Length: 409
Image 1 (tube, rainbow, N blue to C red):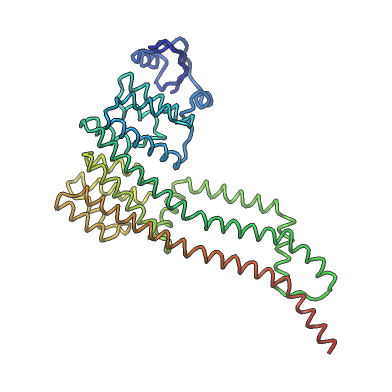
Image 2: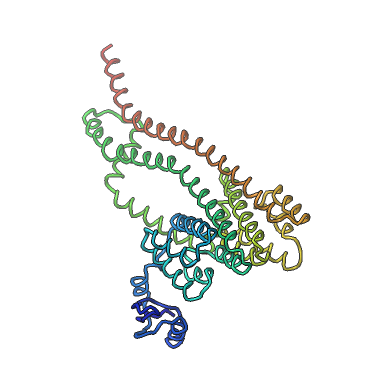
């Protein structure tokens, strides 16, 4: 339950914010222990929480990763240079340009000043700091190795951002071509082809089947454009609702890993991500079961989440996790064998990280090669569509010309 309150802080500044608690008494006790003296408190509605707390809004994946990369890298550099943690957070807060992110840094800095650990402060903002991020920071704090842990976390997040940027950048041009193709078809059907309709009526000659089809498409697009838009909107909403359901998500996950060509790429990216997450956590001395549980929570594909759950069961029974991976078609056989060798030699973490690096390099090459093939295919399809429309429009004119020349002869 959320409560909005007005209070006075230790430094005498007025505070207006929200807090999670079972009831108002517990909320006041928690604030009092932090040195905050409450003057007004009341249960807050969701609308009031979002309006009063800019740090609670939704964050896109790319924006979150960019903030996290800058945060981890700068904190790691400042802490390693001997800067106190609170002072480092203050410096980052001053540099932040985004209002929402600046508010997050301010809250974290305030909580750390009041005695909370950095991982505990980060836990208040799960939309920015996922469980794996918080677990690594917590492990660094408990072992007294916060500086190298922050540096390791910065490398992990930076790698995730690089992969996301590479995929997004590779898909920009194909998506642009698709939109151009759709735009050309719309212009042809709604503006160009209707001009030929009057010409065909004046000619009073039989139209070829392809021309009839194209004219019917043009008439339908101009006369029922509103129905087409409504139908597309309804189909999109239904698809989104279905994908949000458990059955739809499982069906989509199964299709994504089994689709021709793209399925192998999806499996390779998922394997690389899982290997890197587990490897970094084990290398950071996070217990294996906890590392598997955190990786499962960070895995979006339900099939891979179930695979990691099977690995958890195997580890609980005292078996190596390679047993679960070896029997799954989701993991390449060579990867499973390499993991088994790493377990036998006690080099699981380093081996998983090497596998992730190799797969990421291979995936980057595959995506670039695939997009270089897709681009000309889209151009060819666009040319075929435009050519079909143009030929369909000029065929009656060709037929009329042939008829006139034949009659004249």
